Image 1 (cartoon, rainbow, N blue to C red):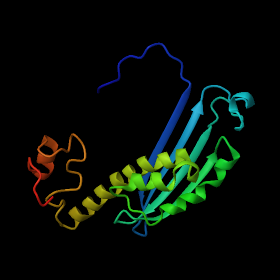
Image 2 (tube, one colour):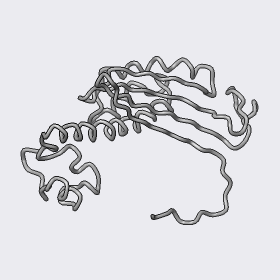
Image 3 (cartoon, rainbow, N blue to C red):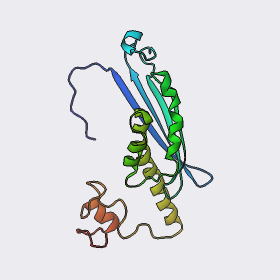
Image 4 (cartoon, rainbow, N blue to C red):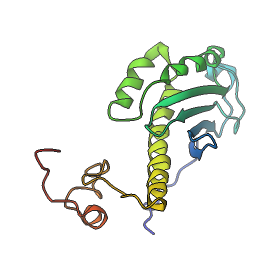
Length: 192
């Protein structure tokens, strides 16, 4: 397995953890959840906090969660945001704004729409940042599960030009992975 190069002498100061999980619900919908935490290795006292809550080393400065409920068409049918631990009292009140996600589809333009709806004081920087990995987790959860279900029913697996074609370097048109998976042509057709 490849590794990063050996680091210089250093001291750990901050850890951000983002955890995303995808679930198939019994009612046919999908729950995609994310949690973000920021932890420092030193105390954040009142002087350094500048109006924020004091935090002891190891106590999360940010701890927040988001859940999107999505249908098979990647439309968000439910959204819930909770700030469990935050630096400022006002942070606790922004979660309800994320109900505005209901009705959006996770598709091209999703990130642009999210940034428009939750820019500046209209949202929480950290909750809004979680929507990027949440969207990716939705795709990683739902598409393979849908493909597996189609396969179990004996249906064709992919359209002639699948949505993932040209989505990254490895799945580029004419690349080995795309050719093996889809027999992808080397050139984009006029109809695409």
